[in-house]
Length: 399
Image: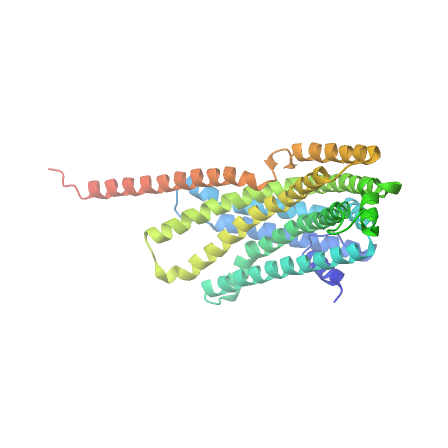
């Protein structure tokens, strides 16, 4: 099956959920915009009703953290719908630039990139849909198969969760495309490095030795031209990546903050469950563990997909430094490429200038997570102590 089939299927699912621009014009585009706005208003209405119906007696700070997920979902979904309805030219413009990068590859390398990208798209799409399908199933079991209760719960939890996950894939898959192109560059540099060295047993009168020597001295300037094309492609990749990041920056920041708050709440609720276990609520515990895995995986995925690009740039630098240079033109080309890569590496990618998109930022996320969870646990222990004092005083006998 054609690798583009899975990408088109994913785009169709995104369009059906109103989080990707319509590929049509005229009436169909307007119908898609109305459908996207309807889904947005449906989620907003359900989230607002859920907040108003939340009447559990818990401390205000706990209630605030618990309810923060709903406005977070509303804001992130609104950004995706905005991209789908009003930001169509930018989306298609960036897609065309990615196609320009791909067309610069040779035939075999281009086919390999498309095949691997199709496999990656299928894997991520299947994982996302199966995971959220499992969450829906656990939600149905948790509410004892009550249709309307389950419908309401999935409308404010799993539907926004699926839309947000697909929104993350909209950012991650083009970045993966760029990663594959850079990997092909690395393969070309490895081949060039091998061609510069004569095979074992080759003598100076051997044709293999003459071929290696011609590559070493860059006879004809083929190596310098290839590296110059790589430099231009890397420059274009960096430009497209920056455009994608500027488009999705606010969405990624809201996603990271929303997931971090949700992880804090779920950790605290799981802690409370194991402190005083109620085994009849085991299904709810499984649901919380799934939700914890979803938000934690989303944070890691956003940070890791960008780090892969950084790793490829570092690999390119290493291979360029390992090349044998016997031509002044080749040396100048390599030096320009190295300076460009070094400048790019020294300027880490940041979402809205707030969050550095690197897995090294996980330490900061874990620190914030532990601080909030410990704070919530201390509040819970303090409330239990006050309740105990109040109960003891109610049993006092005044004479």
